[in-house]
Image 1 (cartoon, rainbow, N blue to C red):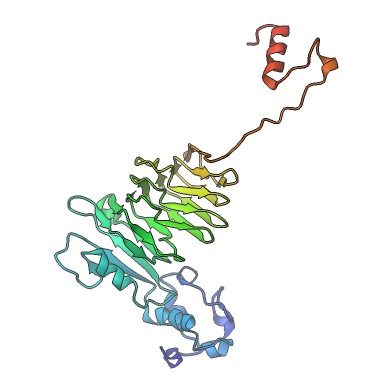
Image 2 (image 1 turned 45 degrees about the vertical axis):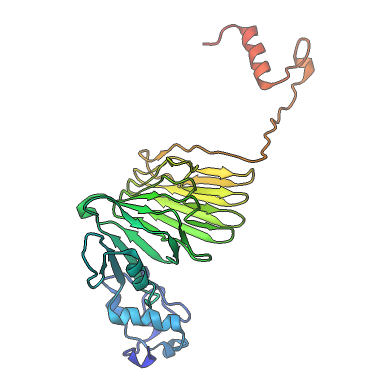
Length: 319
């Protein structure tokens, strides 16, 4: 678009918090209903480059009045109609066309009359995309088929909400990286499970997976042989926030130096019952400091257990 489409200029002082030279806020800073109030300024007055494609895209989204763009995947339809698609390849092609950076990209899954809506095998770039169900129609089961992967260097959808019930069926991860940061946010009673043999999300090296589960969402224990929904190998890092009424059933660390952190457990109704598995050449060596021999009759205890047993024997049965 041309910068001449931007009308009319206002001063920096009139802009909401988050605006300023070199800083154009995205949709969530604007706020959906209020976005139209902040479209009238000339970037040249702010010291910005009006030819910057990201700036132009953000302004284009605001001027057009589109704060989010929804693509409906409805396999019940006999044909595509507007933003509603009856097959994934056509929807993905539309999703891959030019969308202003400041506009949310949302894939909404309609509940199939029978069976499960499936994302087929293929390599996809879903950076910045959100997946959601149609909670007014109940829970929405979707499957991610074996062979469906995120293209190298790209990110998986960051938000999964609206009562989605996800089954990952892959034998290789949906997303994996040794250098990237993947953000996952499960909301509105969304469940993520796996009937495949691989963890859907896997990180190693300097990569990190940060998950937030809220409002009754669940990472299920996989049923097909995978160790967990999120997996860290080597020096990969998993961080998980467990919100209201939510559950994390399993997390897996493969490698002695993998790290797992569960933080920000918000309520007593949150459930954290992890099974952590360390595999590979891991060795655990107890660090027992020997007791002082003069304090004991005969030899000093050889272990903590031995010391406790001897104390109990000395003073009699302990209630």
